[in-house]
Length: 468
Picture 1 (cartoon, rainbow, N blue to C red):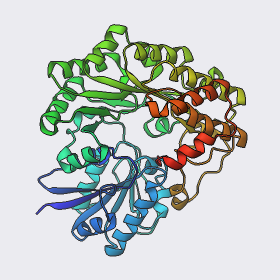
Picture 2 (picture 1 turned 30 degrees about the horizontal axis):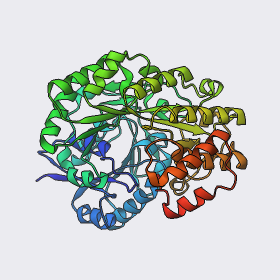
Picture 3 (picture 1 turned 90 degrees about the vertical axis):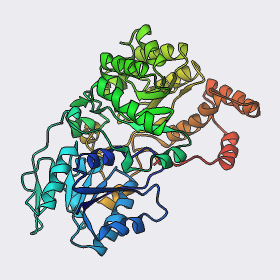
Picture 4 (picture 1 turned 45 degrees about the horizontal axis):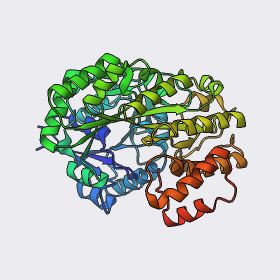
């Protein structure tokens, strides 16, 4: 009789497919283990859905992001443990990778998995099934029966070609299509990031390591999935998809030779984009490229050096020009409020944003505030006080909310108003919004955002969606 392995994805506002759970679930021996994935975003009553499976489950695994998903994870854990106190609860993902021991302060969490979790979780499940000791499993931290905490050595990054392909039959794919409002499949072809950005926790979690699936295998797997689900868009969730030019072009060639009728979107650094020739970029477009996401972070050369971004403003503008000429959409993301950032640095960022927005109606420039994300170099070098409990981390909003202590009230008010008018000043517009577009452009041109009557009216008529 198969043993049930229960996996849970906490509630969030986006409907990206739970790729981490798909990957670890697909690694288990399906002839021996019955893998059940419950996604809190798809359930009217997530706790009841989990409790339906708890009684005969071998273990409960939960992927945990920093922020609001922590609270939902805690609610699930506490309900499961109340029903079955002996149920092993394992947490993996970003937050347990950054705080492997601190997570175990919650009595209901027995084990945490750090970094790439496929091999670690597979070995752990095998040990639990055989009622064997887990002392020698690399990549996990656990609590002994005497309450002492043990952190095992980390597990090196595994070649992704050694892992089985994700089994999308483990999730209701059509429901995600419906919730997304399009037949868009999420997929990941690489893990980790070789760069050193000081505001990012990735160097801490993966040690700047990077592993990827071969182009041939990507082509084979995507074709099989396309034949089965007939999706129209592919959303690559790689942190740096364009890391190796040849691999990107090889994947594009795979798509073309298989005659896949899809579009695709991926992440790109500015220094990666400028290494693409015009011919290479158009080859990607021919294979379906519709949008890239480029993290610019700041328009200040001084701050680019401070945050160790290792890119230049000129590279950003070159990428923007290439995308604009080829009608490729771009999301240029920015961050305001880095420690040590001056008002002049902020205005350089605002100036670059306006320059980019004016280049193409298909360019977006979301602005976020720097938050001291755990594990990042900037956080470790600063004296900011981080949350001390899981409850506090659950209230830690690193997407929205107030800016950090390095942003004055005046700068915060200016940026919030600029974000609104920048949204309507450029881009696609209807005749109904033509007056607002004209007003917004004038305001942005002069950086005059006093008496933001238009902002108050629009936000009452169309409240912004929460991002966290």
